[in-house]
Image 1 (cartoon, rainbow, N blue to C red):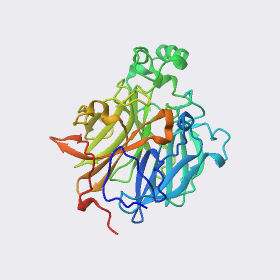
Image 2 (image 1 turned 180 degrees about the vertical axis):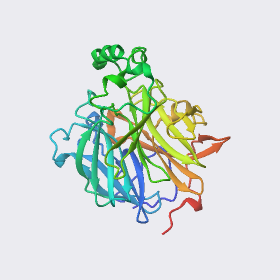
Image 3 (image 1 turned 90 degrees about the horizontal axis):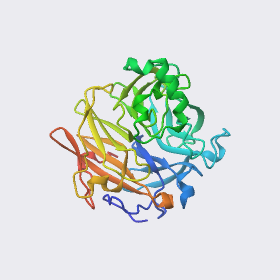
Image 4 (image 1 turned 60 degrees about the horizontal axis):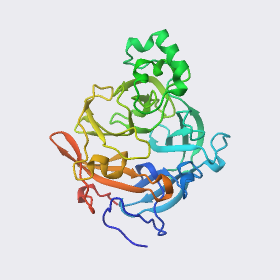
Length: 360
């Protein structure tokens, strides 16, 4: 096994068996002195864009070298007829809940590649490596308006017109969505949830952040104390800005957001923003990718930002290869700050500062 002592963004990244790591659209979780990396398990070809296996997990003690810990969540024996090989599982995220001692996984779910479900799957485990047990499929906050809903989105006529058009509205930027109320049309069933992440705040409250309203608007939804459901408190942020691939982190008491425009598997210019509260208001800061190639975020889309302590943050992104999904690469970069703005540069090789390395 080759031992690494640095990151090589975008290159093949072998695990302890010499196989390219298979954990796409994922996240990190540090627990018990180890680091766990969860992500979508891909297979070769375009079939790998669908969930043929489930969620893979790897374990490390230094962020560079990863041991294959197997399939943490397996769609081949989920116990649910909809959750089967060929469904869609995207952007799995895992938090540890101190109140219950369990590990909680959320993921974007679609029963097929028509992307009409816009649902979230929730699974739990007693061990960070799993196996995760499927609990349910749901949509966030059915029957509940967001805390900051504009009154015009409650207009019955506007809601009725949108409900008739809903299946024909694209999930990319279009003029029809702002004229209607996808929010109201989805109220009874629960809000759409596509690209997503989880965020655990300093006070122990957890949040589900997801692209909603045909991807036009991002929602921030507070979770219950066991992280298994919603409190009914949620907020709309970035209305009609069409963002995907959300990643959140907190630095010096302020909240930072890095995301992507809506171009499917194709890369685009990243977005960034800052706020004093998760509920907003949020101030957009532009594309954080500052080096040549940054106009397309170095070919990648964000998935997670991991705080490493001492003001150091690790940005994780995916270079998707939809024609051969298993060949997707990982772009891990340091987050720098310039005048209060996050900045992503693209070194060919880099190392974590000593203060950020895990203590054994």
